[in-house]
Amino acid sequence: MGESLDNELFWKTYHDCAGRLPEKVRAVFNLRELDGLETKELCDMLEISESNLWVMLHRARMALRRCLETNWFGKRAG
Image: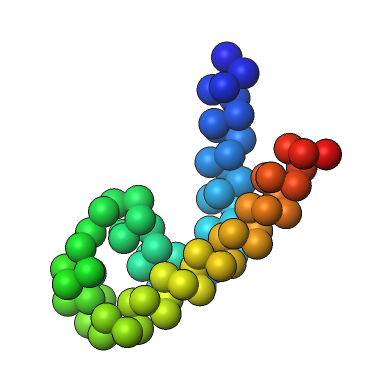
């Protein structure tokens, strides 16, 4: 039960953090990392270059990392 609750709380925190991302950056991250779309498919779908994709993924990862460190890992340690 505790693990399930932790899992639910983590995903709520993740969704709160992801909600702070710009819409297109959030979509790119979710499609790539959660839905597993391949680079070419994602670029074709969103009509963006691979370079643009990698920049958006990097920005999403860094923003999510900062947010999760503060709102999930920081609170869990304290």
